Every structure is written in C-alpha cells, then in structure tokens.
Length: 353
Image (cartoon, rainbow, N blue to C red; front, top):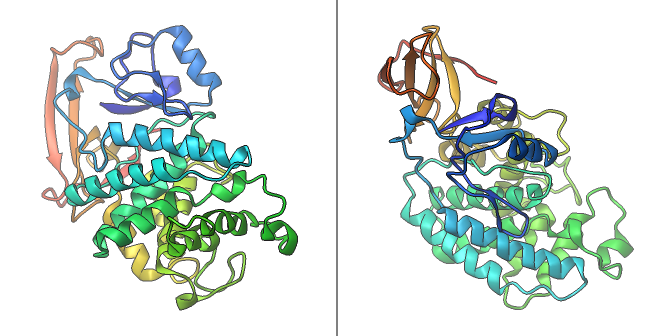
C-alpha cells in the first residue's frame, strides 16, 4: 500500500483503503479496480490523495489502533447525532457512547501502535473524518498520559463531538443571546452537551475550551494555563493538527504530517501546553505508513513500518525497478528495507508530492 495524489492514480490501480460517505456507508470498497469514471467522480468530491495497492508492498500491513469496523461505526453514529442537532431534536448519544467505548477499548489494546491517519477525505465526509481523527488522537494521548477507562471515555466523547456547536440550530441557546464572538460554536457545543444527564460535564467542557490557548489569546473566554481543562488542551492540539493536514479545513495550506508536527511544536507554551505537545508527538506517525520519502542517499522509498520510540525514523522500503519494467510487474526489481532507527547516517530529506 502507498499513498498517491489523485493526479498520479491511473485507471486499473486498486484501492487499498475504503472511502466512506458522511453516513458511514461505503462509497468505494477496498480492492476495487479504479476506472476513469471513478477517478473523475473522486475528483469532483474533492479527493486529493488515495491509498493504492502495490504488488511489491502487499505483505506490508498497516497496524491500526482502531479497526475499520469501529471507525465506520463511529462515523455512522456521529452522523445520526449530527442529524439530531441539525433538525433541532434532542441529541441521542447512545450510539456515540457505544462507538466511544469501542475506540477506547481498542486503543488500550493497541497502545504500542503509532496512529496513522489514513482515512480518505471527500467534501461530503470531511467533517466526520475530522471529528473521528481528533477523537482517535485524543484517546491515544489519554492512554499515554495514564488516564483510566472512565476518563478516556469522557475525553473521547468530548473530542468526537468537539465541533457539534457548529451545527446547532437552537437560536434560544445562551451562546446566541450572550456571545457574538467568532467562535460562538464553542458555547453552543457546551450548551448542547451539558443538557445531557447521561454525559459528564467534563466532556461538555471540551467543545467549550478547545480554542483556548495557554497564553490567554484563545477563545471564547481568554483562559490561561491551568484555567483550561487538561482534556481541552489535548483536543486543541489534535484539532489544529488535523486541520493542518486536511485539504477541507480553513487553514491556508495543506501540510504533510511532519510539517504539521513542526507547526505544533512551534506553538508549545504559546497556544499549547508543552507537556501535551510532547505526548502528542509520541502518539502520531510523523511519516504515515505508505508515504513516499526521499532519503539522503538520493533514493526514494515507501514507509512500511513505524518505530514507536522514534516516530521520525520509520522503516523505509527502497524498490529499484528496471527502466523497461511496467509498474505492475513483480519481476525485474530489487527490494531493500532500511530501518532508519538503525541506519543512523541516513536521513529523510523530503516527502514526495
């Protein structure tokens, strides 16, 4: 499996990761052979990157913190919850709670695996993928911080619903009456979640505070340092990072994962709590599995595995094909796997577009 820009994908390429709609339904299934029509349709949906199978990478299996079934179920339940909010109905969180429980359980079971955010975004599913990614990142960080299961569920549900206020139609909410700030969706999210007796008030503070910065320049209340709940400090980082790597966010440019991590690091003790930044960097794959890299040797390879303690030093596969060989042929090639945690004189010099 490798990630390619849509412009590099050709008819006949085989999809390595399913694409979902905003309702959690499968738009294109793993293993489908792409046609010209499918590629054009994905282009209209705003897709920029695809996960494509490669015969020389078939035995490479991306380790998953959360299974595809659980991710798909979470999108479906989140969609149902959002539909309630958009139609002005009371939020039914039972499905979301079930999905959060599964996410927490699987994250605890796979605590040694670095998180790869590989879901394919479209203009239709972007909000749902963003919410899911933030939830998974926050949960992985919570596990690293030693939170118990109850705390992890509170964090996970608050992070999955951190943007729920953007979708509110409740014009009687206090946020509409008392707050005209740009980020009033934080108040609206808090207003929605705090009314749910089956949900912790701590979870409700995640939507409220996830745009607060530790230096006091955030929104909506300009809180500083210890005034901001620890869960909100976590989600602030995850939300910002995922917006940086998403082509559908309001950020000015879409960055590769390692550059987005650099941006996060640069904002430590300004926007973000330093301790939380450290835990974030321990949790995320700087070079996700399937990414094509250029090495200091001049060679180009694909990331095939991660090193938990050294996220900036993955395992890279170099494939040397004969010039006359078709890319789908499995002969006339040489494979060399390089573990950058052991090859200390070889460095990553760039990510291939």
